[in-house]
Length: 224
Image (cartoon, rainbow, N blue to C red):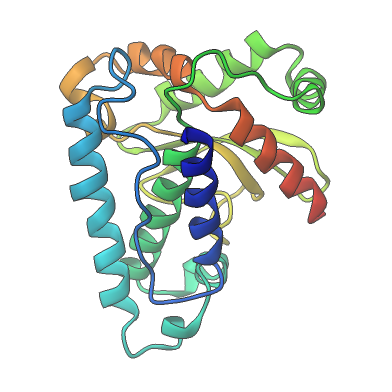
């Protein structure tokens, strides 16, 4: 059932690149499913308030504009030419839809052999990768995201973006296809961790959905 829910969530998420208006997909697990690492109250507020607002505000911002008939990918790829309300809310919608899928209550998921090799080639080891992306998240001043992405040559890289920007946007220096993202806005962790962002960045590995990240890695390579 859990596998079905994540698959259904991912399918709906993918469909949003082909259809507008945009809709928030159902969370593929219960609010309390990640307890011990991400608390139920944080998940409920994050999903039902913050993420829902991005969808509603995106639809409002694009109403009556050419973007109303564009895919989410098309909007993100031209974010720098669009009003900030479109850029921020389109990014917020995409980022959160990805974020829910790369988390899981399933214990001890593992990266595919192909992804482990790619991570080792790019960063030296899995531990070195985790240190690098944790540093990207910890060093992000204010609100933003830390990302693992695939560049145009099929290589992995770690980056960080402010606010709701992401590597798909034309405004970022390091462009690519995100396969894993960590939300470091305070609303993602503050109720449980307060100002201890580093503790949240450590706990995230207990609920990381490596099966989904591996799937996204394969999908990103197939489009190169």
